[in-house]
Length: 309
Image (tube, rainbow, N blue to C red):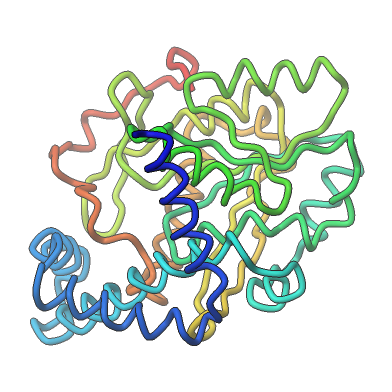
């Protein structure tokens, strides 16, 4: 039965992916209407997060941001499915990267790179960075991202295929440090993205800072790993240019993370991310229960070195 479900599911997904994006956006409009007006999927969570993050915003402004967010969220679903059937040329035109030289320069110098990224739409398309780097076909350079396995085996395998569409590797969060050390021993260079904007998991190191008008527990494991492995660090600033068109600007945070004082990279990341969100608030993932567990600035872990990434 599970095999039949898998085959049927694959046929449906890949059938949908063959449709042009302009057709998929018609379906997206329908899903948006259902999510926002009928099901009201996590609307209370999203609007609470938005209103608390922008205390000067009026009720109508909060609702406007929320409405645009749900439109983007619906687009995200179908754009992600489109990864199953989209040409390199179309993706390269729709997902632009600026200042790729900052990343390629680090690679030329033999430096691995930690990419600080976030849940800004459409983050799944960012794996197409390989189309823009001159090291795309270099077998000594590994592109990838960290992920958490999903409960559904079929869905997990589907997302791994989609995320690997342009040659990127997926590293499990629990074993990423060990995997990257293995790559280092093989004398290879890696560029790996870390989605570091959501709340820390149980056992994660954390650093408490102010973010979007909230005392916020920030994941510090990304910085710990970059520090230990002496990597360069780059922030990917996402913006939505128009429907189905995005741009990422690569902002260098450090040439060598091991030379940065504790929490410096984490503070820089959240500062730039906050400005990124303020400039386009509807592209961030507001339905996440980011501040479900309140913290205070006094809860900060003083030393990153004592925590595991």
